[in-house]
Image (tube, rainbow, N blue to C red; front, top):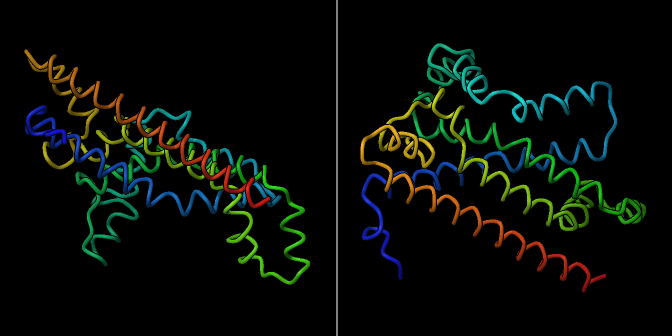
Length: 236
């Protein structure tokens, strides 16, 4: 077993664990909505569809700092939603790790939606139509045919979202700040170390760790996608 305590300083280990935590919850919170949006965009035509599609992908082309500022306006202590959350549920997102997860989820969401949408579009609609003809409820068709057949795309979306969350910087530092032990994720810790004399070695370790985690996630996603594809082909 690799003892991370012997390889990393407490500050580095803290940033690593926080990044994994933030990325996990960012993906977990965004995945159900990503599947829903991907399915709606793939299967339905409605007025304003192009506008909705553009709004969902806006974080991809908008500067992350702008996204972070908009999150402050909406979810800050005096924000439209933030003040309501604080008053009704006593929940504060700004300057917390939950806020960092929210910022990461917003930035990763378009990548998840796009991967899931393309996968659902590739599912043969004749299979769905046959199940509906046999009397299957639309929800049953979705959960027994559409979703299982689009799992490789869901996995790809999860991995892309996790990797994007792991590397999120601009929106996070704007909305959640750079608080040691609270919101200082890997990118923020790396940035901080580069501003400190003698911090280059620690920054290099964090950069290598980020690369290794991303590569591991991609390899795992490819393995799971191939495994799922073989299972589907085996039942075909």
